[in-house]
Length: 283
Image (cartoon, rainbow, N blue to C red; front, top):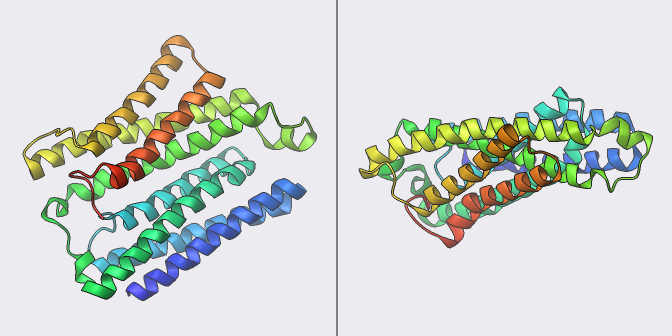
C-alpha cells in the first residue's frame, strides 16, 4: 500500500510539472486550446492527488494529516484546488501560469519529505510513521488541519494574485493581456475575497487549536513558535482587512501587504519546523 501511494504521489508530482508547462506554453503562444488542455490536466492531477491522499489514509488507518509530508502534500492539493476554482469562476487561465509553479514547489517539498519518510520506513518499519504521538490521537486533528489547509490554499492564491497585480503595469498592452488578465481593480477584489476566505478558516483553526491544546497539554495557549507565528500571520491579514474595510485601502499597498502575509504563512509552515522546534514540530 505504501508503494502504491508513493507511485500515485510520483504521478501527481509529474502531472503538476506538466500542468505548469502547459500554462507556460499557453501564455507563450497564446493559443486558447492550450489553456483548455492545461485546465483538464490540472483537474486530472487533482483527481490523482486526491486518490493518493485517500490511499494514504487507508494505508495509515487514520486521517493523513499528522506529519510534515502529509501536511505538505495536502497544502499543495489545497492550493491547486483553490486556484482551479478561481480559474474557472473568473475564466482566468493566466492565473494558472502563476499558481502552478507555487503548487509544484510545494509538491516538490512534500516529495523531499516523502523520501525522508521512506528512509525511516526502511530503517524502522511502517509502524514508525503509522502510530501517532498521544497529542495527535484526537478527533480535533481532522478539523484543525483541514481548516488550516484551506486557509493556506486561499492565502496562496491571494499571493499569486498580488504578484499579478504588481506586474500588471509592466505587461505590454496588447489584446491578449487585456482579454485574459482582469483589470487591476478586479485583481484587487479577487485577492480580497481570497484573503477573506483564508481569514475565516484561519480563525477557526486557531480557535479549535486552543480547545485541542487545552485537552492535550492543559493550556489554551502556550506561546509555542507555531502558535506565535500563526497569530502573527492572523494579525497581518486582520490589519489588511481592517485597512481595506475601514479605510478603503487597496491597490499596490494592499498587494504588497498580501504578499508579505503569505511569506509569513510559509515561515509558519516551513521555517518554524526547521528553525524553531516546539510542541508542533511533528516530523
